[in-house]
Image (cartoon, rainbow, N blue to C red; front, side):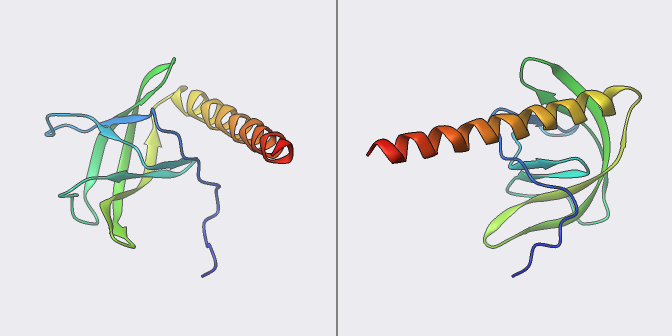
Length: 119
């Protein structure tokens, strides 16, 4: 199946989402410039507007307003979010964080190539 996403997705294990009304934060499944996926048992219905905070490791929490676009697929339940607004200068912080994730992913790929060539 062809991927129709406009922005690349990044998978990083340490990003958490804090959503009002939920007791604990959620691990974020993937991130992009315009959205994310949060695995959860009882996701809000599509069309629900959420005000949440994403906690970026070594940076802090950034406020985000998002809409639930879907409740998962391929067996994974959760909330597929499209970001509507990242407040003020926090959008710039988030974009820089994603750029750093891209560099980390490139470094990981180079590392994996080096390790597999030694075997």
